[in-house]
Length: 314
Length: 303
Image 1 (cartoon, each protein chain N blue to C red):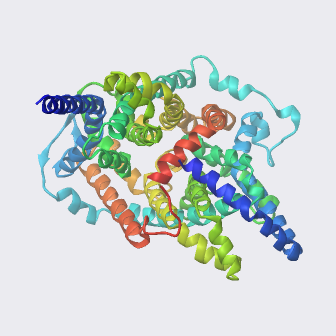
Image 2 (cartoon, each protein chain N blue to C red; image 1 turned 180 degrees about the vertical axis):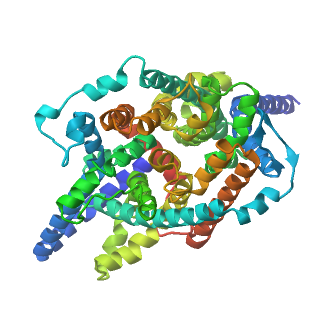
């Protein structure tokens, strides 16, 4: 009887303890969740609703007439949207490829004996943390048509006869924005891939060497398979970031010349905050997200990150 | 965690080093050539990475006439602090913009750390049902382009009269900073051995007391690291700021973009302003690189 009573008492205190823990957990969690609901969930839902409305700002009032999918239908006939879509496709595909290739090279380089000096990691931090707007100003100055360092350098090397207006020529401006963004994007991806390289057990390389694999074969059959997860992560992240580029366009070209550097993200901004058509702007923003989402999903499907690998990680 | 793995990898590499030394004796010239190539590649890498920034800093220290001569005149007599005097002059927009950026960054970081550490602790330690999924979902929202959430938030903040206020901007900044803070701190709390907290619970401390008196104090380094990260993110943000600020709360990036638009002829001042905005974050990142890379490894590798 006494024993049973004690056991019961134990269960009750355990129960209340668990309950008290649960209550504390809710109290600790609630503020953050409320904020996130207000600044993420609500706007996402609201963006869908907005895109189904004719929500233009006029006379200080935002209209809200339901128009169904009219905003989305309008996209099909919008030349600016078609152009932004093409530009974004070019920008994103080029940037992902270039950044991944260079960053993989940098990661391999920093994984060599000489490259393991921590000073190189410090150097990598600089483009990564510099304010994007400073990055834009910096490249705007380097690419300056009359006094830019790039023109000075190329003509000193004898590669150009006369100075080029890099940001003023429709065919050149977007590749130049690409250059500026590639420069800033490499460090993070390189650090990510470097961490991946360092997770590949050295014993695998030893075994490959014993099997007579040369440098390329070791890279092809040990490094690349072992890097599947970091590579997939790098591609997904870089795709998202390429779609999000805004500061560079705003500072360097304002989408010009003749909309040559207009990307989807900037178009959504311009339609919403310059043309004050929030419904149509929201539709463009939602489509941009949808494209990003499908691309990211496709990368994950193809590369299957987290699939069984040679190395074990906690 | 990731640090440990790196250490593992390093010690493992040390094990195979003697064998490599043997082979290198056999293939000496090839090794030597490899080494030279690696060093050349490292030099190219350093020039490519630092060149543009060095040029920005050098340009900011040159007279306007030196910058606009072809080729630029780099003689010592041309170096000056005039560009900095120009941008920091009273009545200019840069000094108030820096103050605004500091206020918003501190406000955002403070709120994000307070709310984020509490939520992260609950998820890591207090058996919240679906807690891991919750943290992952918060992180996944970072996929949304900022433009998707800022259009509706702009409308709401206008109705509430919160456009061009610190509160409005800091609240919106929480949308991208809070999820990362929760995710990174969750990882750190999970990595702490639970013995201390168990002992505290045995001594009759409540869950709240265990959190505030035990878990938080021993997590000061990760809290600090996450704080630095949040501060830099907030300091650098541009798109939300250009949409949500007007006159009173204009942040440094906005003021700099105005320099770049307005005073295109004053290139020296334009790059001086950009340098001023970059120096604090670059210094922060270099001084606290251990913390930043730690948080980076936690967030990126596990995520």
